[in-house]
Length: 159
Ligand code: HEC
Image 1 (cartoon, helix red, strand yellow):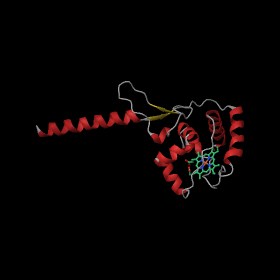
Image 2 (image 1 turned 180 degrees about the vertical axis):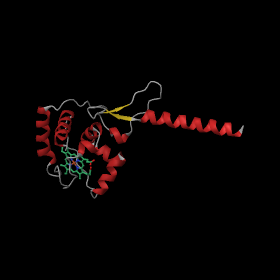
Image 3 (image 1 turned 120 degrees about the horizontal axis):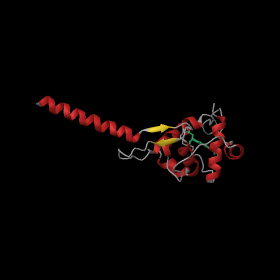
Image 4 (image 1 turned 120 degrees about the vertical axis):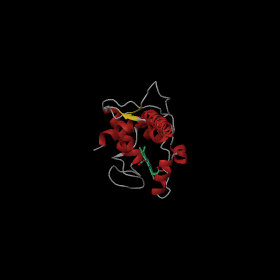
């Protein structure tokens, strides 16, 4: 009798654990866009802050590379970011060539658009700021379109 109880509890535990994992699972689709798995059967969990950051962007759809956005993004990078960032070497801030591999697009755009709040609240960024001796990246006052163009440019420099 006792062993039946134990088995039942173990099964129930396994079931709940699996359900949680499924609800929180993140799928990388063909465009390396991050989409939370939407299953009607399980209670949907909001994607975590580590995936989306904090800010106005909830979703980014990545299509084929848009050349005019790339050109705009490159111009912005060279005028507004170059004082502190290079693609391959650490300067005042980190090297940014691998950035689209490191950060989900939504998170990246939210950091560019809501820099100050994210620096205060995002655990991942707090750690990064420590690594950069407490230097806070100033908000670059980009519009959504400009931030999206910078993202498009970063997609083309990724190795
Ligand atoms: C005055 C210097 C400065 C300027 C200008 C600047 N940054 Fe930064 N950036 C930093 C520093 C320092 C960090 C790391 C600490 C932090 O986030 O505050 C950083 C971090 C970042 C990160 C996060 C990197 C990671 O590994 O998670 C991104 C993305 C970024 N910057 C993009 C940009 C872009 C795009 C621009 C231009 C639109 C820009 N930065 C302009 C100094 C700067």
